[in-house]
Structure formats: structure tokens, C-alpha cells
Length: 391
Image 1: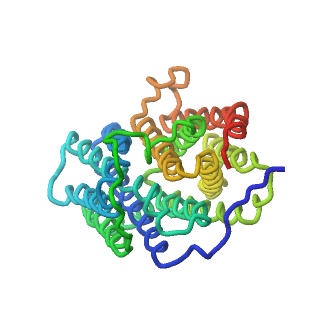
Image 2 (image 1 turned 90 degrees about the vertical axis):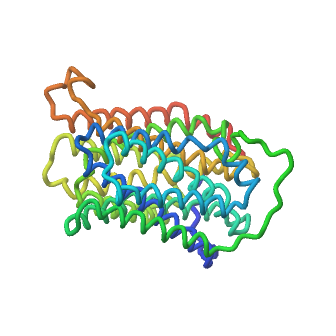
């Protein structure tokens, strides 16, 4: 039997690692506060969808140059300047009343800086703060901080907007990014001489070609989450209960799935999210509290299992690249889901169900993607992974 081997140790948690993990939390919160702000300030959901799509495109822009930048310059300095770029982008709405095109441009620039900062953080800085035998646990823990930011950032924004003008959220998001910058600056990294024959463009620290099956499956699943978020973007209680679901996922991984069959975590996660979507579509009033908890629980355990799959699929020197691949598949799926969901048009998307409210059409599409991700995993991805894994 293949067991989960979920990391549960605590030796990793030194000062430097805490700083990087919390920096990842604040950076994710900053970007997600801006996501909610974009939705609230846009003249229409369609305009917000274009901004979300631009953000997803931006994440990819500098990916092929990450290895060059990290090898040519101080790796922590690259992360500093990328986060500083995020701060500047998040602060622009404080001083300028942006038109639609300006909002899209700012979100594109935010995606470029955020993508570079996170890829350097995941692929290099986190790994440099721990011993080799601790790196799987380090990757696992840091991604959980980023995942929690997906609930905590929008929750904070929707809570504060009840008391503050929506434009003041720019101060909050920029301030969170500044905190992330200061925390990364407090970690000391030894100087490393630039390598020889550095390539300006490469897939190193960007995409692991051998992980294409996992990336496709994770992309399908995170698109489901993006579609759900597009429906619930303005609901404070949803994000509060989503956080509860994430916390339950951490507990479930430690106590429920620790010695379960290898396929169980991913399958259970997708089934839980699919069940939550069914409850949402049939509008069972008593399930109001249950739905976001199931979504947080399902997406948390599924994404954590896939993270470990990415690590085990990579060679020893490709761990950082595998982490960037996981990050890209997750973020691009979220961006696509938000783009599709916020730009929804029931009659244009699915003519046969055009009589339904547009949010139900998005729910049907999300359920389709979830079923597709589940069937893809059972019929192909798991067997493919078992054949190609290196650890």
C-alpha cells in the first residue's frame, strides 16, 4: 500500500523560515485584497473579469527569465524588487482614478511582479533556509500559508469595506505587501557567485516539462475554485467559512489521510468540492454553512496532495522548478476561473440553460470542470504519475 507520508515534523520552524512563510501569507493577502477591490470598483463584472485575466497573463511573463535573474543577481534582491513592484502597483489606485484600460494594465503589472516574487520565493529562497531533508516539509508549509491567504485576504477586504471607503483598501493591500517585503529583507542569505553560461531564457525554476500531466489536472481543478470565487466574491461569510474548511483540511491530512491509499486524498478532495457545487445549485438553505467549508476542505487536501506529487516527480535538482510549476498551474486556473465567471453571460455560454440565472450557469461549468478533473485523475494522471515519479 502506498501511504501518504504527510510531513508533520516541527524542527523546520526557525526564525528565518517563519519570516518567509508569513511574508508569503501577507503577499498573498495583499494581492487578494486587490482582487476584491477590483471587483467592487469595476463598472461591471465583465470589466473585472478582464482585469483578472490580465493578472493571470502577467504571472507568466517573466517566468522564463527567473533562472537568469536568480543566477545573475542576488536572489533575495530579485525577490525584494519584485515585491516592491507589487507595492507600487497596489498603491497606484490611491493616487489615480483608473479607467478600465488602466485597471487592466495595473493588474497585468501586478501579475508580472507577483509571479516573479512568488517563483523566486518558492523555487529558491525557501529552499535556501532549510536542510535538504526538511525541504518537502518547507514546501508543504509555505504553500499552506499562501492558500490561507486566498481566504484571509478577501475576508479582510470585505470586512474592512464595511467601515472604510473602498479606495482605502489600496492602503491596506499595499501595506500588507510592504510587511511582506520587510520580512523577506530580515532574512540573511549568503552571497553566491554567479554561475557560468547563464541562459537568459530557460524553463529552469519556471516549468518542469515532465510535470505536464499534473499541471493539466491541477489547472482543471483550480479553475473550479476560480469559478466558485467569482460567484461568492462579495460574500464575507463565504470566505470566513472557507478558512474553516482550510483549517479542517490541515487536520484531516494529519489524522485522517496519514496512512490512507495514495489516490484517496485527491479523489476525496474533488468529490467534496463536487458535492458542495451540487448543494449550491439545488439551493438547499440549510447547506449555507456547509458549502464553503466543503470547498475549503476539498480544495485544501487535493492541492496539498498534488504539491507532494510535483515534488516526487522531480529530480533532486528540479525541486524548485516543480514548485514553480505547481504555483503556475494553481494561479492560472484561478485566474481563468475568475475571468470566465466574472465575464459570465448565460445565453452566450450555454444556450440550452440560458433561462437559468448566470451564477447557476457558472456553477454548472464549475461542476463540469470538477468532474473532468476527477475523471482525468482516475483514468490517466495517477497511473501516469506512478510510472514517471522519481522519488
